[in-house]
Length: 103
Image (cartoon, rainbow, N blue to C red; front, side):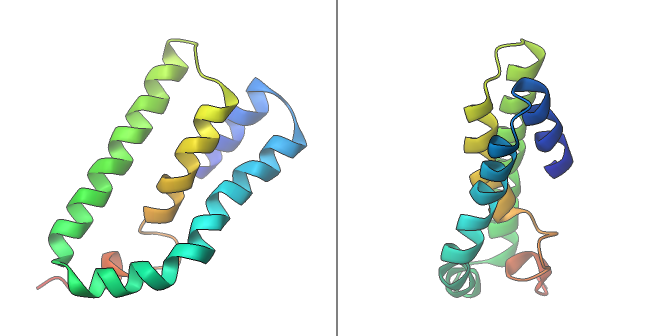
């Protein structure tokens, strides 16, 4: 989804500043929330945590896709959705609950 959001922002505005803000929106939660996320991921049921976070991501991406198909998407939609989506994505660094054993 990272590439899709970059293309969307570029097509909407063509602004390098907004592309940088998209990266910032993804980086802030990774820097600030990783310590807390690791603590909570160890305390909660890992399967449930993965299911809940992936369901939230799917819902947000479905919302962004719907806004795009209806041609009412704005740049701030993608920037706002980038914040939680890139934070909970299991492929970012393979750490936390998504990479830990769930049996």
